[in-house]
Image (cartoon, rainbow, N blue to C red; front, side, top):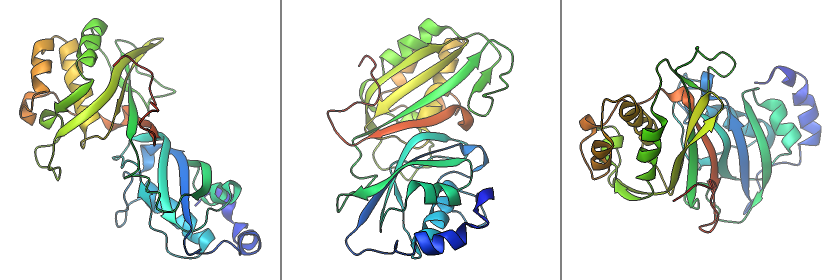
Length: 273
């Protein structure tokens, strides 16, 4: 719980006493988190997770069990800027909710949603970014959000790889072999690399993602940019090749969820493709 929540229970008992389960009420949260100290999104026994902390905070205020539905589950160490979740019940005030949450989770929107709103099923696309510091000194200030790559990378080759991604592809090569997924074709709406001073960032938006998909894409493109794989080989991987032919899974801390869209006509990223 947040360090400043010691006396909040007394305040909540008065100011939030009216916030209780409301039949037929659906709520929507938009929030960000630093994934460094979390064991991913989903609740796990004996582990600190984003879902666990959010549920604990909501149940403290609402005083009834809360079951969250999230737009996209994130793995251990992965961050989020604008994650979205929904649940049955009333929305607490932002001040109250943030007061009972730890400092590495911040809620920016807490509001009533349309009945039947589902943060996961209703999402039309999600966007992620992966940041790298190549060929430079190990980063300090953003070391928990940036992959340090001690060698130079051919940025032109990275761009060539990204240009191949928009469209529908069988991405079997970019997810673990042992998988719960039954269908491996995903539609990528846009993808590209951005230059951020001495850092570079891969940005991608798709209707949905396979487990570890973004991290394996990044790990494989690094191999291309390091001269260990050709662009033609990368292109072939988009045709359902086995996982063993793709590159390694990049470390999780460089990845973050940028946002979620709920309109087929609204893009999160504004990139070619």
